[in-house]
Length: 123
Image (cartoon, rainbow, N blue to C red):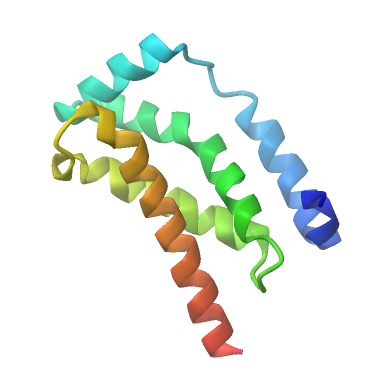
């Protein structure tokens, strides 16, 4: 099933613009990502900001899993972005660098699921 088939025109337009904005972020190698993650774990605020940017494309990918469940993709991505920012400030909760990606991914998914649940309760 094609992801775009589940989207409204509004979602498609938003997603196109958002993905264009993400293309402007610098790419990182796996080694750079690991170094940035280590610095973020040590409390480096600039590294934390960069780590948020690194995970923004993952928010879009995760939002695809929840598309068509009653919430706009724009709202899901917004919730996911807030979750990434929150997760990066809570990295002291992880025991090792190898747990960071899973921790951030879980925070994104939990926030999207909570948004969908709240949104459906309000309807």
